[in-house]
Picture 1 (cartoon, chains in turn yellow, brown):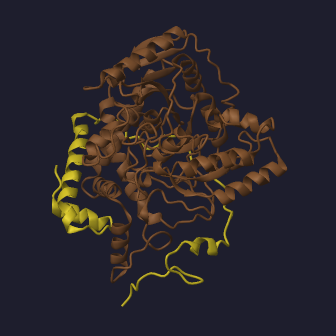
Picture 2 (cartoon, chains in turn blue, orange):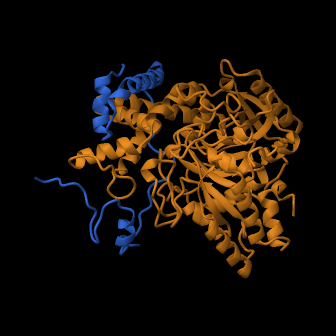
Picture 3 (cartoon, helix red, strand yellow):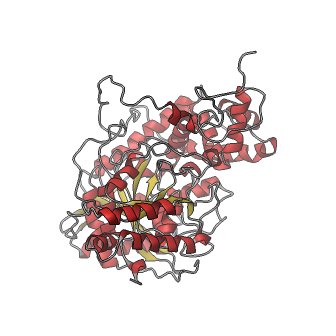
Length: 95
Length: 485
């Protein structure tokens, strides 16, 4: 498998990253070489191998269903690049 | 006290506890060093006013109960620090001031330590040379034209140059051990789950671990003890009793079995790395350890596995940078989607974009099984290799890196050649086990080289002890002429 410029554009769209057309050529080359590199894995037969799903041998611990913080609206809004007293502000989404 | 630069973290703690020096004096000493060390570009943010205030506060109360009583420390800029800017080396977090403290740094302050500032790193910890930071590259104190390694490059540089008596970094594929090796310092990546990930800017959540970077093994044990521990806020945190690594440090390693994996003798490995490895083996034999040949057959598949798993997790983790809740927002874009795209296009650097795109690609419909699922299966095989070996050996000895520190700009044009740097460190993260890198010698240009000791999960005390015994025998010395001052 290899990746071409159109596919890179598509993946960039999925990733919500705007790309400069001038960089598309070199970026496609980089991504293609990385994908070629990782494709070595196809040499291995893994039909009988279970995938590793967690590196820590533990089950999630339940906790009581209680609010342990809250009332921190100001802290949450503090770092937003655009906000008012109550909300994050974003560009208009409904016409 | 003129020889403060020669003091280790443990010695400084003792000086403070025996009232031979005040926290303020030692804090001012490191502030002076940091101000004289600007050429290294190892700091992104300093907070001297706060540091001095905290030191004075410590001196007036003098509580010597903590493991790190009154000691000033700088930390990697990946740890969220309350009210102190935290950037992760990225433009997208250029003005981010956390309203909370990471668990690991909080543990340090609870033990009496004081924050000096935040250390440079590769953007979102993605890199092996500290050249991807938005805030500029960091220089290795070992040589003006050398990288300090990465991603904890600022941490390694500041430590080697004595701008901080010890520091902490994070290690996703070698980001503590490789820079430690490049700068002649000690770095340990703990067992996955030993140190809480809460409040650390996430890169690849199944691989990320915080760990200590220090001048010697004793300091490493002390700092690991201070920073580790169970945390309810991290669902993968291991719930177990805290260990006394520093108190239990012992150089008696008689009878321990140390494995030597033949797969780590890679093609084109420089002769001096091979010799270093042999030297390490000889020292272990002399100390009464038994050397055993072992096999880790899937070693060569570790890097390709890593470059699927890590970008996949990164692409998910970094989805949160959308210009809405915090961080940089682009002024361009007619609608919400365009605002997202421009924010991320302008806010992320090239390497971060590469990894998000690779991650998105391998997780996308139609490719998931071929890449991501395949990688998770190979990851299992790699972990099984280690599990099998640790039935017969106590620890494994390998080189830390396939070369000494390379030159600035040498590998920036070829991502794969940069990735190959982590060939000896990446398998350990995939298996979730601990490993320590200790300085073990120099190449013919006088650049430091490291050896790595690996153990099974939660056996940190064992590799610390072996490292402690080896350190005595190696007697590594590094004299830097402080050219940056």
